[in-house]
Image (cartoon, rainbow, N blue to C red; front, side, top):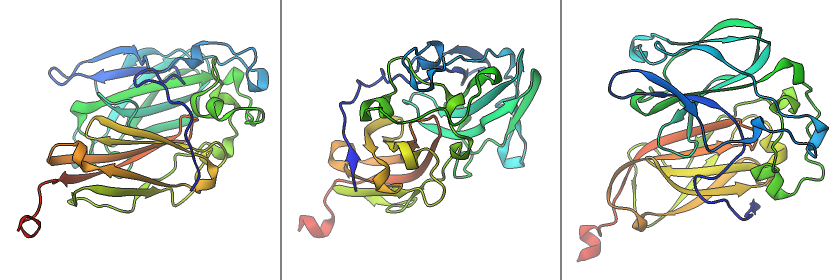
Length: 291
């Protein structure tokens, strides 16, 4: 397995996109719009960028998020997100886990075309694996680019360094340049652990993309490992890994107790996926070992 290990940015300063996202308030079920400060690229032009296209973000108007979380997924109800566009665009809507660095829980709209006017999107309240999302830790994130800048197949990795591919070159690049055939949200599975496992010592966390891999098959992958909301590490893999990832978790760095272990994957082009399993860390020696 060939992993790329370039110099990593400090936590909380990783920049490669401009989004609008909306918090779900735990107390009064209100929603407040604010900027996602870990991303910056779509607000800037890139005169030296690949394809020579200036990334331009689309503006969303008249948000109506009051029904985004006011439903019961267990009863097969759906949430609603309403917004207005003054020009046609390609839209992405994701669910992000609050208090994490870009742990995506679900993709609701994957860079799909929407005409000018008012649109209502729905979601079933479930994550990539089909589990019901904890709404108190969910953020709805919207981003998009106008159809006027849509030039698929113009993006190329030619001449880009591994740093450029992984972190984005200084002024970013346009999502509208990506080829349509790679506009895929891959499925991820964790193969070495399952719900209820007790982890102790050095544990191999193995995961893979068993199906279509999208841009990762060309650009590689960024894979993040979380225990609950804590980012354990981020690793980078080039295309030669074939969509298979391995990380050795040292449980002795963490207190004993229950956690959700998440693996989140991004193909460096804002196509993300994740899986999570409930596990328990137990570093205390067993009765047999202590004898």
